[in-house]
Image (cartoon, rainbow, N blue to C red; front, side, top):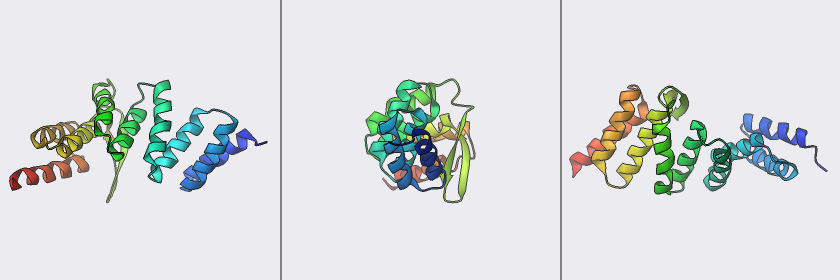
Length: 173
């Protein structure tokens, strides 16, 4: 039999060390011994980090059902859906973030080539919405969404870049 506490700790340590494949393996084994939100989170995050978006989505969705107002879980479910090309399935989660009373003040870390930024969830959600709109050919709506993101956080690199690219697309047509 497995020592559940040791497996929990080992999975979390592997994730923290960036050993995502090992974290997935150990967290999966640990979850077969007992259910744990912390292990489900570890499994979700490790799967996201290695690009297994369906497994990440499955686990973040489990966590979201237990904590439906979690901005982090709403974001992660939307993010996984976008990466799985399930854009319409991402939309309700993006809307929930935008409508959330704390999404303008709670921040998340967004990674960019130059490092990272702490960005309010609401700005991130508008940027995601703009991406979906742009992908669907709704360039004017996308511009409005990127501008909304920049009104919330004017130094938001991804929204600024997406706005520039979208405007260039519109001028080409």
